[in-house]
Length: 172
Image 1 (cartoon, rainbow, N blue to C red):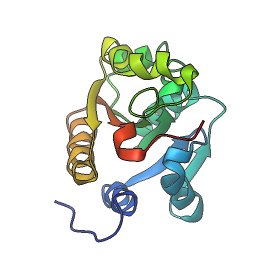
Image 2 (image 1 turned 45 degrees about the vertical axis):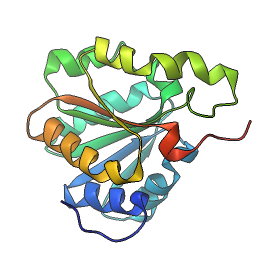
Image 3 (image 1 turned 90 degrees about the vertical axis):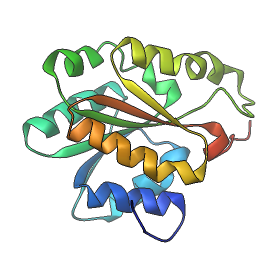
């Protein structure tokens, strides 16, 4: 169990780095602001700003082929961009870890976020990705610890869904 003191976002960064995740692919997202800023500031990691989330699948698979660990940071609205390329993860038996900030549920005010927000888990599961939702700050670290083991030791595709109840709803 990670004993780091600080916000759950700080603890999450420390946990990912302690587990040798050194490539962070992302499409800019306020929900991942802390991780993105940490990745940009840390000279020991590679931060990769993506044009769209689909590119993150190739980044993560390529990292694995190069003996590195990567994580894809995305919002639920971007999950739809990854579905076709998740076949690469499945057919190539690549370990895969994504942290998804959820939209379209608890307190959402933007009607455009609901369709993909509501379909994210089902879409990922249809492509063989194990989904682990996180509802509270206390569950972030144990859930991501489990996801790291499931992805990088057991070779699974795993998505940690950081729910709006955890991250808060954006103003709209």
